[in-house]
Image (spheres, rainbow, N blue to C red):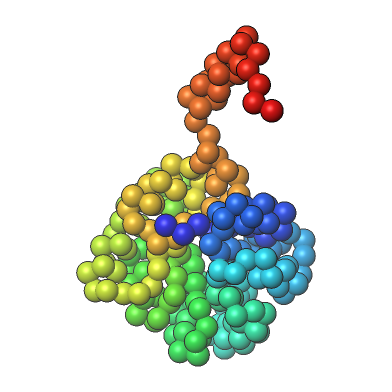
Length: 217
Ligand code: E4P
């Protein structure tokens, strides 16, 4: 499973990228707003750091506006994936941009039917939002499972990009289901390293090292 990092925080991207943990980056208007930077400028800086796909989202609501914005975003770098919402206008934009050879990430997906439409429209990525479904007592992981089955039934190339990931367990659950990609904030990716028994075990080793005066260097 590929790891995308869901942030525009340049230092966090660099840190994880240096560790080989970043196969791509996703942003959305809320993430860009939080960065306080110009969307073109910050996206360009991310594309200079990361060689994998970098999602940049359109802000227009109509197909004509989305297309114009998508074409502008696509010019930032060859690894841009234009992110469009899963609306009829977004699907139209997805089809046109995909036909032009631009990667497209269709976002705000909350149902298997929506994912089916995105694949038909030639999406490179479909982004089902796990956490936001869980927030309203629906099962986000169940949606990832359904999309996996449907895409495999028909051999769609669209990659399942599990999004709105809120816990480290979501990452391993998505990997078990067979999501192609999972995008998560840096803190969640780092939290994957945590285990209470690792901390306890290390504390025990440290006590013995000190008692025995063990030194390596
Ligand atoms: C993905 O592309 C989205 O930017 C992101 O995962 C949304 O996550 P949230 O529901 O935690 O805002």
